[in-house]
Length: 160
Image (tube, rainbow, N blue to C red; front, side, top):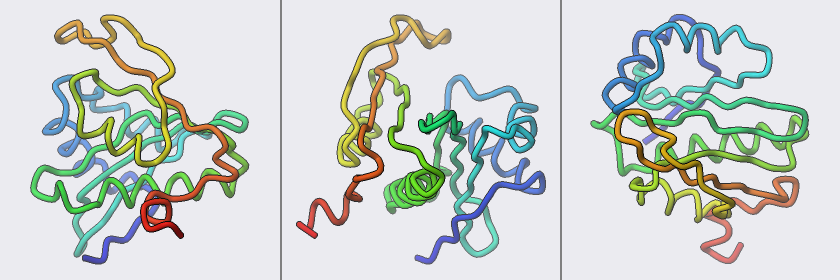
């Protein structure tokens, strides 16, 4: 599977919003992605396969930190490594921009995402109690320090 990872454009918004709405019980407001595409601190990315946007990621680059704001893969394309590869691409890009750390929040119940983040080297650093307004679920705060010396998960797992 040859996904192309590229910057999100306004032409992608319909597909990105559809992915967000099918992926989360609390999707972003529809206009948010357009605003993020214009925000100078935002780094908005998509994974495209055969002309179709199959995954998206929005991150905020603040000084030397990259905050992963949202990441999702369309349900038809999950469990194929697309999100993992997209996150790797974005972290490499952020590192090239001078990022030395990364942060994110993840639902306490989203064990699959937590496992992926741990494989990247993220560690739990705290908890935001009742963060999600749909059900009062806590968010786990996770951080990846030393991004400037980071070894990608595939290399780490293979010993290379």
